[in-house]
Structure formats: C-alpha cells, structure tokens
Amino acid sequence: MSIEFQKPDSDRPRIVVYEKKDGSKFKLRVLYLQLVMMAGRWMSKLLISFIFIINFNLLFAIDTNESDIKFKLASEAVKNREYTRAIEIFEELSFDAEHDAQYNLALLKKTGKGYPQDYKDSLKWAWLALLGDIPQANDLVGELKKTLPDNTQNQVREQVLKFLKSRAESGNYNAIKQMGEYYLTVPKEPDYKLSYLWFLIASAFQIEGSIDKRDNVEKQIEPKDIVAVQLNAKKIFGVIKHGKNVNDNNQVNKLEEIKNED
Image (cartoon, rainbow, N blue to C red; front, side, top):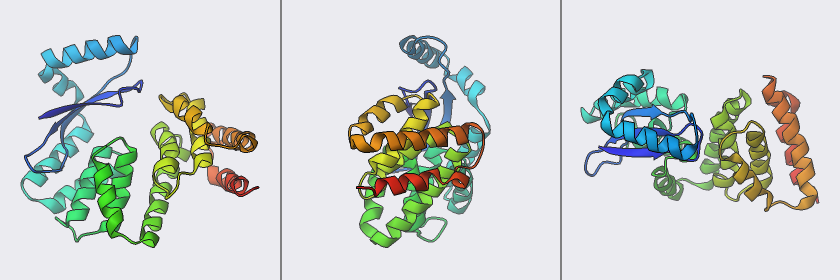
C-alpha cells in the first residue's frame, strides 16, 4: 500500500491510497478521500492527516463512491489478467477525467494487454494523465514520443486539446487550468500567449494555484501583446460564465491571429 497526498496547494486536495505490486507500474487505487478546506490550509492538513491515521476504516466507508467501486473492479481485473475488462472500465473512467485511470489505460494500450498495442492512443491518455498531476506519466510520455513520428504526435496533441477544451468550455475548473498547463507542456515549444490566456481565465474563476502560474507565464510575453491577450481572456471568461460555446465566438482563433502579429 502507498498513500499519496495529491494537489496539496489546492483548496480541494485529496488523499489517495494505492496498492502496487512489485515490478508493476500500474496504479491500483483502493480509495481516495476528497478534502474540503474548512479553515486555514495548514490546520486542515494536520487535522485530516490525524483522522486518516487513527480511523482508516471509517474513512474508507465514507468515501467509497461509484468511481472507487469501478476503479476497484478494474484493479481486480488487472490482478486476474482480465485486461480487456480492465481496459473497458479504465476507459470509462478516463473519459470522466479520472487521471490515475488515464495513466493505467495508457499503460495497457502501450503494452498491448487486452487490446492490440496502440501507441497513439496511449500517448493521448499519458499526456492527459500528466496534465492531471500523475508524475509517473512523464516517463511514459517520453518513451512514446521516442517511438511515434512527429506528424502522429501532432495528431495526438490535437486530440488532447480537443478533449480538454470541450470540458473547459463547459465550465470544468480542472480542465480550464489544464488548458494553461497544456500550452506549456504538450506543444513542441511552449505557447506562452495561449497558456497565459487560460491562466487568466482560471485566475478569474479563482481556481487554486492559477494566479502564480498566470504571473509566471506573463513574464514570458512581450508587453505589447499582454493587453490583447487579456482582452480575449475577458471575452472567453464571459462566454464560459454564461454557459455559451466558446467556439461560436472564435475567441481562441482571434488570439492565434494576435500571436502572429509583428
């Protein structure tokens, strides 16, 4: 068993318990505890950690939800070498943006267990897992990028962007912040303007950790471009806030035009 304290700088951190076999890369989640800050961050961490240690069984009973049940079923399928069944469940969870499931799905697609090897799809889920704060996915992404040609990698980049953007446009806070991370991490070269755009939006929605990201990325942008990017961010923020479709207003496309100005 291993215990991870994930997203410690968020106002909704969580404790995740994993079971891991020797020599296996799979992250087999036993349960996770979603924490909600009720007071100062440091006091909350201390209190929750203490409760977790002395009353593990109680927390297990409280936090066993549908996601945990499905993940446990997939984990049992992996243990029993029922890889096709495991892929089906992990894929369902992956489309719901369960990042540890995305990592496991990427591993299965890479190894070809339960499904013919699919490096392209594996890279998609590995990138999404990495953007979801699963650090083990970084090595997997590196291995797959060495195997796949540039044009295929670019196709996967578009798939990852489409997945995140659709969720961000619908107002998913996690995806909004991940859009900023995407433009720093996934393209061949960081796109600081687009990253700044989404961190501006994330900061406006008060998404934890986005303000520091916004301020750091801003340092990489020419002063002449900052106001134009901020203007488009304001428009996209309004569109998301009121539940409209960003693409109808072509705000991101307008930013691309700004990017190419001298």
